[in-house]
Image (cartoon, rainbow, N blue to C red; front, side):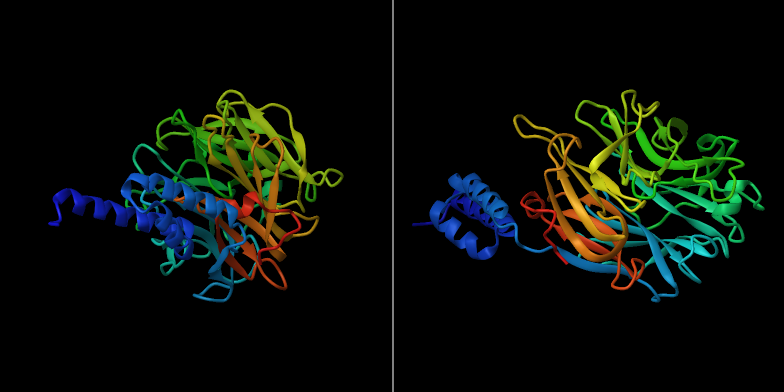
Length: 419
């Protein structure tokens, strides 16, 4: 029988299906699945089998890739991780490179590494902003859906100033707000442009963007989580507030949105299925060791009262919240959350919600030992990424990227460890 153009076309389609299913299913099970279905006409069933089997095999442990390691490449410590996935599927891992120590002030640079294989390997680190001995940090990136441009919100202060003096307004300078942009998938970055006059009120003292990542709402508005303190706060007084800034011009101009507080600061935002915006915040009430939450019904311009999520225990630390999927038909939407789930900075845990962050139905531990800040992202193939601080003796020994399937998390229990 002479092969026809149609038969060759079917063969090509079969090979494509085989490769796709192989990545989802695993090659040993794929052979069995192909034997059952065996034709392009049944290709959809083969891929469906692969996806079903992937859900049934949750015990494939997360990959853990060390991205920044303390003491390497000219920096004493790396802190404040942030990760996003570009429209091209490139993973961008940001952090602060602290030159002389672990402290939050002094000579600090803003760094990035790129990965074009889903976070398995990374480029050499590049410096986005080095202002000699000053402090450049608090990365908070977001991808503009319409253009693919990456916006990176940042803060800056003199290296000789510290947080205590800036809060009390006794420092030489203050915290300022900046933005850098990349239009080539994170390969190069524009010189930072100051937006303090748009993003910070005159009577505010301390200020921080993120850390973590911003979001773009379905209507196109860009929302960046931030925090601040009012001026003139006495040393030792923890009077913190969370807020957001937003842009309806793809990052060209900014406005200050809703303010939430006191007793909360570092935060991240997630858009809920009904269009409201939830702010999940670091909580400073010792008697209430759980994450603070507030919801906006007007796209981040104002927020309702603070509530505390009794499931989300925290040691007064940053955390990350991220949309995994929107509701579709009878299938609920999925929201992810990560933080050190303890009264100490340890046990970096990821959680899953199927009811728009009202409750958390599954949890897995990525690292049992010391851990602190984290940031979540999702690859185009559905793989979850968590870039987080961890170590064996203290949390700031390295910044690690964990890669895992949603099925591993969906079947998890909070007592299980994936270290």
